[in-house]
Length: 398
Ligand SMILES: Cc1ncc(COP(=O)(O)O)c(C=O)c1O
Image (cartoon, rainbow, N blue to C red; front, side, top):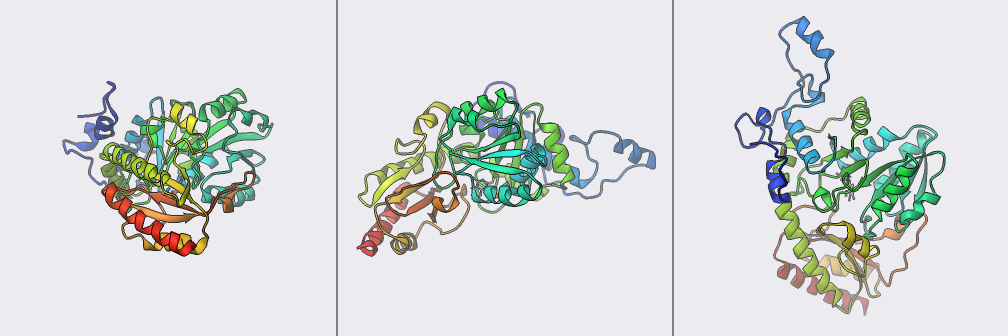
């Protein structure tokens, strides 16, 4: 049993991915190989080993073991056309390594205004300290990005859909403009995963996942990955090794375990989230549902053109109300936990305030916003829970 090059469906792909016989040794899943020290037979063997590439070869624990190689290999195989994947201890660590593999002092980064806040924090903190400037751009800019590309622009960072407000970007148009000017493109693809948006096939150079979300799927592990197009993996790997990056074998094993069910989980997240988003559309307390698969979401036409499916995270804007009435809604929910992150089996709700994290775009919303992560519970139960929450909101709003 190993990877196959025959075209197969997503559910088959994630079952087969990364299970090379030399790593499984006949066991269904590669076991956890924990290691720091690797022992050699002799000084000669140790010296000889140091002269060879460590790709898929035991050398020292920091260079990984079959447990990590298997998950990295699996993620590469989910991205048609990709050269390789490096794993990290979190999604943010993956974003940092990807950016540092591309940018040098004096360079400029174009960063989408709807990026995840810690990505923005990295640009204004670490990158700025190293003499890298950042210019924010409107998530709806599309081909217009060409006008922002200057002599110092080295990279364009996209996140589609955007954090909290879910604007869908025109990735192919941005990629085309970047390629014409020799600029590297990076995409935070955590929402769609390669199953719903095969980023490398769409021309992206470095595609990033917070594996913490859908890969792991159980809200109990932090993981990140960067998958690189040909020509970009060597630098990514070199930079990541220099940064001392290594994802723990135990966490990677849990990531691999999660991956086996990712396609079926995503199908359920998609179906339940759409059911609930459509139900919310019909509620008088709701002014707008920001779900990429629904027409109210900026960039919905691009979603229809480019994506193969939608996942379980979206936001909605309340009709009027304030901080207190929004809190009344969320605090009333019994089946939705209140907490950060998403992509696990359980539903979550948080207040979302994207306007706090914007530099060049403004959002005029009818009321406060709530972000929902729709888990694997029965959608009818989640709807009943939300109904009680909206009742509480109405009463608190007056
Ligand atoms: C879109 C997006 N990218 C990256 C991350 C960071 O992932 P991690 O929490 O694993 O560092 C998150 C976390 O919420 C996220 O929502």
